[in-house]
Amino acid sequence: MRILSGVQPSGKLHLGNYFGAIIQHIAYQDQGEAFFFIADFHALTTLPDTAKELDAVAGKKNKPTPLNQILRERVRDVALDYLALGLDPNKATFFRQSDVPEVTELAWILSTLTGMGLLERATSYKDKIERGLTPNVGLFTYPILMAADILIFRSDVVPVGQDQIQHLEMTRDMAGYFNHTYGEVFPLPQEKLGEAAKVPGTDGQKMSKSYGNTIEIFAEGNALKKTIMGIKTDSLTPEQPKDPETNTLYQLYCLFANAEEQKALADRFRAGGLGYGEVKTMLLDKINQHFAPFREKRKELVARPDYVEDVLREGAKKARAEAQKTMDLVRKAVGLR
Ligand code: ADP
Ligand code: TRP
Image 1 (tube, rainbow, N blue to C red):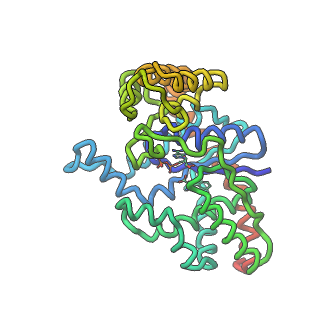
Image 2 (tube, helix red, strand yellow):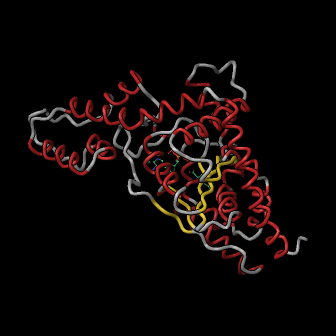
Image 3 (tube, rainbow, N blue to C red):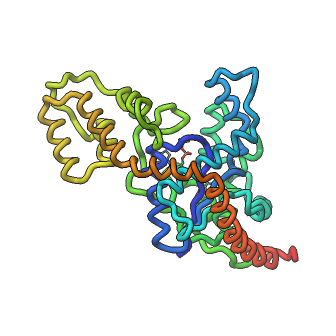
């Protein structure tokens, strides 16, 4: 079984990314032939907007940070994060998307088979425009490049979060158009959702960078404490009984707790006599316990600057060899060579 997933280098990873995507990615490295990549070509669709936002937040409007610096740092950060969280380059092939330029060739071929209507129905494009991102052509054709990422490795399984399901449907459509038009080349890939498909943020909405409600995986000390203590709660007094199921703190706690601990806390919610301050402290302890070894590992990796680059370069060699095999089939099927 071939497994593939990509992650955008879009800033600091948060608990939603971790429980919704990364945990599954890392577990898959033991279950088949796994490929993971950092989607730097995809990141270009929003890089200038992202840079403007970052500079505005940092108060650096007059002296903008160079875009290439932002992209390089972000790619390196995601690589460090994944390696620290347990991605093992001896088990999985880990690489940068742009190190396999053949994906852009396949994306072009797929684009000639894809109707405008299919892309116009993409909800992620509409969402991004509504959020104020510049509607460039790359943003519109994003799903074609994503389909090329998946199909060029002839992937069977694609672990993703719920928001990516439509992209997988579109990928199967594009594989179908190709197979129908030029002959069977691509297996139809299937998405795999994790258990905790929707992690709530500090305001109770879905955790997302774009809502500014994230809890970062590698935050620690006072910064992390401030975030946890700032989680929005209702105005029930400690004495009043509370419903755990609809409570953000309880939902977050459950991500880290075993069944017994979950039940114990749910019982205390229902019984009354429990203040949110205490639950926040319990949650903070859980987060610190869970991520302590990963934080150490990340610090070790930061101290070995060549290591990450070596891993990505080796990964790219393997990935590119695979991609080239598929492209030979594709070119032959189409009559390009
Ligand atoms: P963000 O919404 O913060 O921009 P991304 O879109 O970069 O996050 O998501 C990267 C991965 O993490 C995707 O697979 C996505 O489905 C998953 N993910 C993001 N936020 C959550 C969440 N709150 N709950 C579950 N999974 C999430
Ligand atoms: N669109 C994905 C996201 O935002 C990232 C991605 C790009 C991806 N190419 C992919 C995920 C191929 C899985 C497979 O999370």
